[in-house]
Length: 273
Image (cartoon, rainbow, N blue to C red; front, side, top):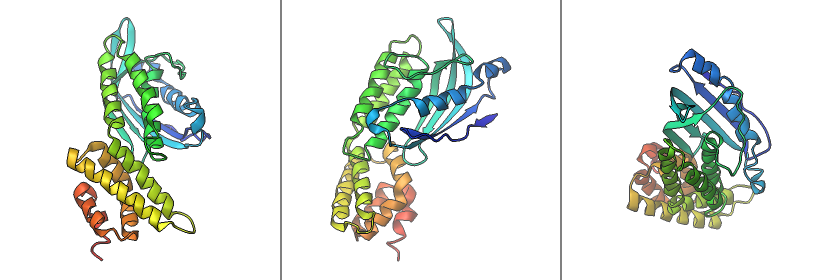
């Protein structure tokens, strides 16, 4: 059974949150115990104060949880699930095995003190906020990558699930240390901003696109088809094509076919005219 919770609208970091819960693989009594967890998680994201300086991010979050089984850890029942965190655009995190305790009616509260339930979901909030802030400024998400790392470091000490937190530390490292992708994001949005409005600033747009292409070329030379770069490009292929075509950057547009072959048809459309 898939339960979809309607979007919420608040003026905060997360303005719209949708939580889907699949409990078909669980026993009836376990399903009953989990009743309401979707709304609990949704309210946790909507009402928590993730940072006073980022009140107007208005992010969208879609979360899907597919529960698979339960396990007893130190006489506490943990639920095991697969999870997908997605902003409907350019961030997507799939987790094959996520474990957390939950009892019916349990509340969630954001805190700097580690909690096996709240900290699990706060971790992914922090990395998604970090990814969003990287689109506003060069390396703008640094503070929130650090917050995610701090949570994960605390979780490493939890018996039997510490390995999951070690994997999360590695995820933060992959994201935060991929500085060329972070530059790509910032320069792409700079180019978009330069083109917007009644009087587009074409020189500024072109300069930002040159930096964007240079960073993307570095990623391709070092890593080839990078997963998280691919997710970002998938979300913005049409806009990238429009920007490069507007700037007359035809070589760079042809390079996009090599960088991102999954979107070959989009990049080639203006080249074939």
